Length: 332
Image (cartoon, rainbow, N blue to C red; front, side, top):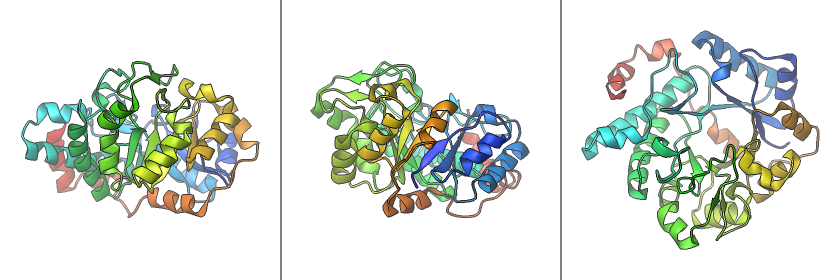
């Protein structure tokens, strides 16, 4: 079997949703704001999805904080990561805030039955508006130090951490959701400016998501389809042994490769362990109707390490704990 992550349109599973989740190549489900009405509904949806899958299912969400937080009502309002350095100038206070916010985000997400939030962002806050204050800092040292604490907090809650968007999305203006960004900086600049957070934190991360960006001085393919970026740099030079997720193959930045099957093949061939197909049910159906490459034993082990590592409290129970109540002071 391959490893494909899909999405659903509503707040309950349709018959077709159930059929797709039961497909042997579907091992992941990503949720969006449209899938959320209430805590109880979300808990029921996650449980129903796992039952429909009939096999281990990774449920994920983009719940970084700031403008990228899929669930609002009933959840803590996590600030944008760039706010941490702005608000806390003292090094110790900044570290504490980052660790506690990482724990809070992860604990709340897992409390409703979701395995992972695709976090943290390890991009540098430079010219990219789609990144902006999603980044911890405008320099590699700042990103690395604050993100390390945020990751530690995630781990304390029992959540695996996924760094994105390798090797760095911050230095291109174009948004890969709607364009094909090209970063034309020289190779040495990219390695000096953008790579350090991924290099320094590679042993702390269980997952990494590459960018749909073409780094033209390095490779003609976007990073998520590049054997050089994923194998030579990420696996060999950085020694990363965690799970590599493609970014959403429905994004415009992926269209340079061809149709959905071509994108999936290119991502798997480059070294992705799991591909995401979101907001394109026709594309997902077409992909899953075809033969996909089998997942290696190593990929399955990486998948298993991404799942919730320990039982969690319900959100209502979590909100009664002293730590949850104390961490509220770090919210905007």
